Length: 203
Image 1 (cartoon, helix red, strand yellow):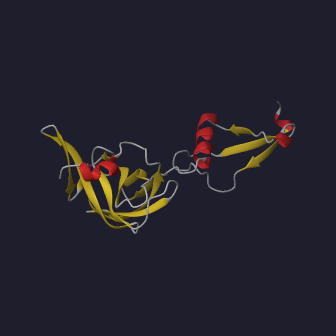
Image 2 (tube, helix red, strand yellow; image 1 turned 135 degrees about the vertical axis):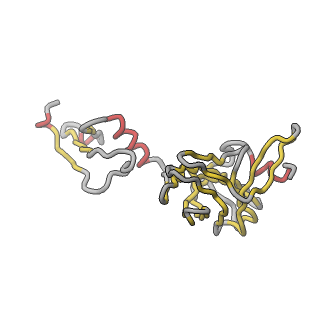
Image 3 (cartoon, one colour; image 1 turned 30 degrees about the vertical axis):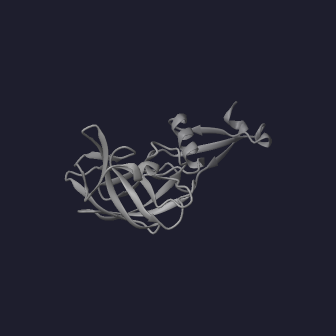
């Protein structure tokens, strides 16, 4: 269809995918089908990236990367907990873009009385979990906190973590200081059932 049949609509605010894409997008509505709710999107460079941007912007519960200095906090999430649960698990990826290493040394959240950094590892064919004082984040590298490995523990929860909620957490680093992050709460079945097994782990 020729451009003369299209009405241009130009984004005047910042693009929701800014940081992933430095391209200006233009959306044109087709006059002939506008009443049917169809929209024709035209991007000057890559249509597929615009589509990905749109999906990210419309998807609830998506955790966007948060940064401070050389540190980038990616995909922070926590598992939903049942009523009466005393603990919950938190997970994320910490990426260090700098030339010097850093170290995660503390975590706090208003959702629990305290938070701890834990590690799960096999020792003589027995899965053991222990609290650690910190986690090194190498220069030009990353560390992933995930079920079955390093992870964060919400201790003495003040209320259940409910799917769809955002939980504020403050990460404290040895060099970068405090980084405030919002954790997305996902369904209880996400990943390994760590919180349910916490009491059964040997410390």
